[in-house]
Length: 280
Length: 276
Image (cartoon, rainbow over all chains, first blue to last red; front, side, top):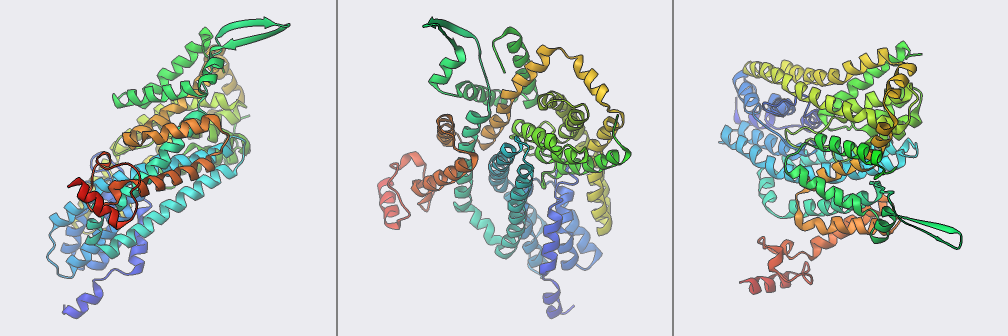
């Protein structure tokens, strides 16, 4: 094969990249505890491998090097796919890139992208869009679920598509970019947003009521009943919710499973109600 | 009267979509807000579906799969609780009591399903040897069926036997102290989700923003959109003022004087000199 033909053939087309983007929506279809996204990553790379390699041997080698352990927040796989596709393209055009390099760059991107993806997608974007949707849904408004679905997916699809294109165009430069503080800025801004809204939710959406009567004063024919909850509300509304949240944080850090904590809280609710300490 | 044949078929299809959503974690069809609404539409009671979805979504707000760790399963919980609440003509708070035990069962099933899919991974390894692209695609996509069925099969069984009297007599057996106690607990079980988010963020030095959000919410009636905008504003201001982002090298925030720093390059140099 002459050098000229090679150059025209070994370039990913826009169509290939769009196909990779569409496939990346199914990143976790074969999620398994052995290698997590391994098959998923190879599945995403299929259009690129088909385009770049032409012998069975090369194709098989390329598939196998992407069948290795991989895991990232699904919404953040775009840039990794882009960079990997760019590397494969350079390799297919004769550059001396060995398998180890591609593998280690993928592994190297996993950490930082999870560090960005988990707080942004699971700590900020989903809780906030879901909370807005749920607050509408509580009144039976079907716009709540629709809004959540549209907002979340719009951001996710944009992150996948533009992430892939950005990674592909920047190639190895992206790896250098990650060392800069751009990603850290975005992550910190998202974390602040997430934490701030989470604080608001603890106050707004947690209901704990302690109806124990502290005093009963009858003056001028009017009876004023003061419960424990009245006193706490004067101090700071939602205080018990805040304390409980911090306690649960502690328990989770001690590796107690969330499900167990939920059942403990169930027991607290039933026993507390039975004894009259907790009310609806 | 139980469900019609068409409803059972539609429920099967929807629970397949919900099950696939739970592993893909992309389209979010496994979230209560969406799954309960879809079931509500099929059963002809959209309003109850949406309201139960909103209630369960609040509880499940922070349930997330990080790495290989699995959270309680919202997919199975949403579908089964909505079927039982709507067919049995139950309250939304009865739905919470049904959903949580089912979420545990669902978690066990999803762990099982994600172990079974190792088989598909190994099959794909063999096809990679021959560069058989088509079979690799098939291996990846059929693995999705395992996750679809782990929600759809239990839902099919429930939808075939469910009846209003059955649900009512089942729930009537539970004494009042337990059902009311469960709905009391539902008011504060939401904090488990918040705590999961707080721990995942793992940024202790940003916790002041959490307390700020709490205090502002305690004394105002702002809605969530307002909190969202305020959160973004605080985030941007923090980044603009934070000296650690205005220097070529990362410097611990505490080492530099707080506030006063800006994008100004001259100031960067001043700070550098100061630190040297």
